[in-house]
Length: 404
Image (cartoon, rainbow, N blue to C red; front, side, top):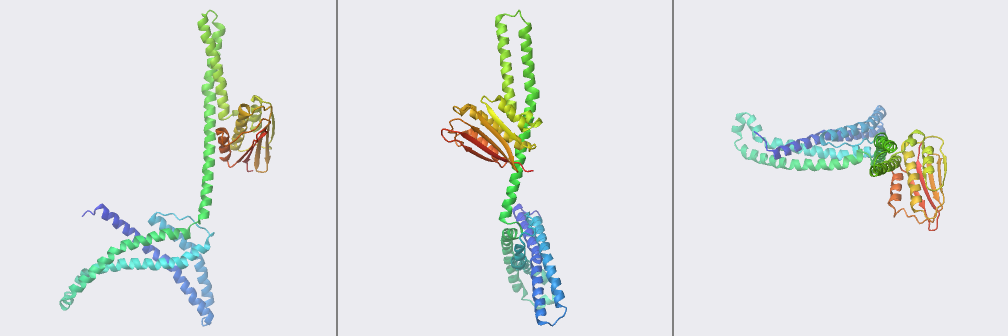
């Protein structure tokens, strides 16, 4: 006979819930048994009637202490295997919550589990009353001819009990799934701390992956498109120099193409440097910033005091901070005549300060470039500060973590 899907799911759920409760009852009641034994031994020690009671009491206390983590591990296994709920390992950071669960809450759950499982067994036994009766000798049935009425009442009562057991079992399982993980697992503060650690690690991985992707794009552009443009510019230059008998119109087309090819090379070189300059990997932050200062349209006074190389992600952020700052000064800093860039390391913090003598008035909340700069700094747990009063000067200060 094929069971309908709805009834089959209900039967599977009832089997899971009752198995969960039946397995939990001895785990919950074991600690209660140990506590009753300890109380009895304490009474024996106070009364002084048994000389071996102190030794047995000490053994019972040691057994109780070691039983707590064992019962916690068993409960974690029960929830994981039967309900699919993974309770994090609490360790010994919350010992009193574990003791409280096994000694008080667990004992209450244990008796409730015994009650529900007992109702299931009693309901099944009562509903099969006629089966038990027909298992008796036929002489007994002849001597008790009125048994069918009582057996019918008992069978109906058993069916009623069986009808209530699934709801009771599901309610008790839901109650345990809310209470037990909160007592045997990590606290909310520990979960938040673990979540922050996971997010920090994932963010660091995303930053490293983005930096690696920029390096790959930089290499591909430098070794691929840029080299083809250089070859094209060389060929156009050779054509312009060697083909002297061309009509003026053709020579003009070659001149225009040659000029545009050189401009494309310059733009592509700037794009490659903006993605990730190769000199940053090869020679370090000092050399990369020196190149920025040399290409800047304003005089830049650069001072870099770094005793050793830093993490690639930190160096990349510092480089792009200075690059974006110099670009902003050139575009927006009115009447600015110079820029001072200072990069120093103080313990586990690298500080980058960019200052200009312009008229000020820069507002990070109104400029998408400055907002993106602050977001890039925060991506590595850095801090971004900017001071730009009207009338100047403007100073940008960035602090980046660089643990040893």
